[in-house]
Length: 595
Image 1 (cartoon, rainbow, N blue to C red):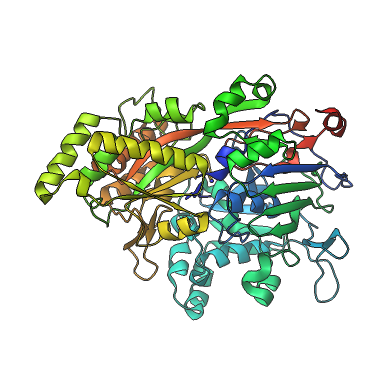
Image 2: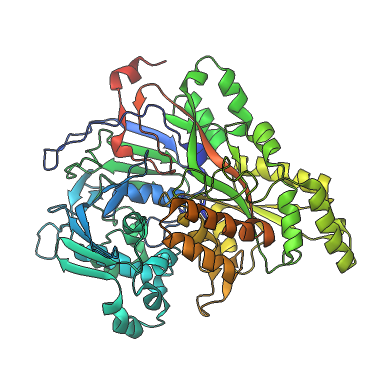
């Protein structure tokens, strides 16, 4: 991840890109599977999750980094990416087999993993019991239920499109309008329970990222018995049931959430028994978080733009600061259905008028890299600046002026009369960026762009609908480490920033509202191409369409992470925006001695 998408979300700004950064990349020693749990004692970690409430803890409905961050600790998938290397590791599956043609994946699941919940009366985590009083254990059918629920159109999962793109039968099942139609299509969906501990997924084509997608949150196991009983309320404290290293202890809406270690979690090589008992997460923006960190109330914090120079110069804080790369991208989307952004010349002019280097050097100042396209260099298949220095789109102010002047002459109007609004979600960092770019557009293009600041949930809803503002801030953190995730999953029709009309397939509905058949063709070809050089070239060709010719989004920068962490905290470094708290630790003696 928002924005997990940060639509990504960030969906995801990407709240965690400002809030989290690694300090000491030394993972806690994993417990042997089946070993007695290591009691986490009273170790408690306090941090900021970003401004605004968590939108949801429902894996089928999660799309932003805050929601996904919490969900990945409670509902691990069949695979689990290493947070540092992004390598696919065993999650709830101990191993998996791949068919000779590369399309069928058979996952062999861990056994005797109980479903758990936090009992507020007993003040402890307890096993969930079935109607006969026996502990419920994780089964392949629970994963099947999760995948199919995500594909159920009535659930309206924002990430169903990923399964539609890759899973056999997924698109038709998702398009079914009634439960009867879905039932008729059920056997054609590539999700099959072989036995209680064996799950089989059938993909449309062989791809290096299939195992990664299999482990994403929209395919997490879900408690069918609970959801069928209480409906959408199932994610609330006191009701929610999980099976991973942590479960939900408390969720005070609009203020904080607390995870508590699951004492029945056996530990694996990729997901050890947690050493930290509780993870307390405040819903605050970075400036407030940093103040709380300096006051001793948080153990880690992001560093906001206004304070970065001060932190770098501080004798103590500078030693706790880590500036590190992050596979997340920051960009603005254009609503191509709304004037004047319904003209490619105007969109290209606005993108060319963004001085990305100046923004990074003088506003952000945190090691970010000016972006000419969305997919981060370093991802599988993604172009690099060394090989393609002129790909994508660049800062070209004179060309931008000419393009806009041509448009204005045709329309018989002037720049100061254009009605343009840039929407961004609440964040001090996003506002600083928006104000800087607003000034660039005024000075170079003569356009007075209005700024609209919205709370995260409202921002998502507006961005995903047909009435989004002409320009909207968004971003993306990797779901899996491949350029496909930043191109097909974002910009093709039905992607996260280019939603499809739920009632009229093939018709753009939300986000950038764009369809270009040549772009779609190139992205499909790139996803199937096995030669790395040819694959990269295909993404360059597709990028010329998306970022220059049609200019449907304006790439701005590739993230870095600026974070301070107390020296008594040992943690790993996530390059994808999602932390694995079960690998973190706190030296209680060092904490007691710390001043």
